[in-house]
Length: 336
Image (cartoon, rainbow, N blue to C red; front, side, top):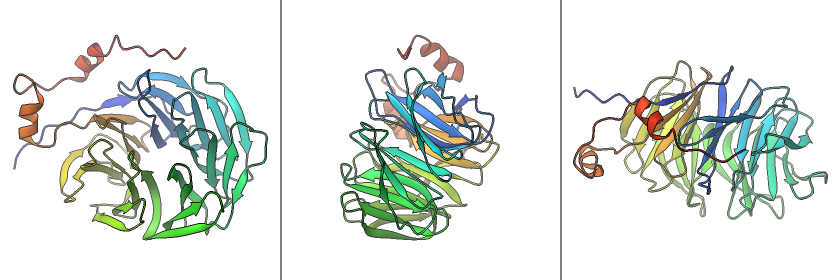
């Protein structure tokens, strides 16, 4: 059996409780950023490339279940067990607004145009807050069949999707009418739903299955069974030729999108993996775990021939974490 090269991730400490959600910003003039949600009640912002800590958002009084950044990474949002969703200034860390709910808020998402914040949780109601008028009552989309677990926008903010903690399927809602227009059927509850960067696919994780749906016609494109129950999956954003999945066996696996073949397996977490996400350029991906750490893994070429050709002057020797640290020492992001 061939000895596989062991991947060395960048390990990001800081959270004192499990990390339950991760979100990468798009690439901005200042680089790209990674925000993490944790049961320790304090979302954290990091440099998405190096994993270096930038700041902590302090103000929640309960576990934070979901977090996101707007398109320009100037504002952050978080959803918490303290019955609020908060809007933050991502440069200063200040709370810009706190949106009160009547129960635990489980999910939040900025619209593509950054004018609206979508939330969902134990109340079984999807709320759309107008960030230009934060004190105005939100639009409410009711009739979710269960407690909301995930939310996302698609079709240039004309459609929203949601999944439930206690029932299978992904529901798609027309934003204008508030009506449910389609259900993507799954056996188990969907714990992760991601709209691909190009808007073509919806990637879902339910039970031990990862599925890819056509985001425009809603047909099932691919479905792959995983070696264990997976909580999260993410499609590579640039080429769309590979995807990652993580779950209860503590490993993050890399698969070929077209065949479902496992092409990599990263070990290092000491607890179940709750969230995996590709960086916006696809060169790395992050995982968040029950063990309280975030690990950032390099995607790397997936076969030996690519390895040979990816280096300008022949094969290159593996780069150590220390070398990465040295190379990136001078990269500073103006976020003061």
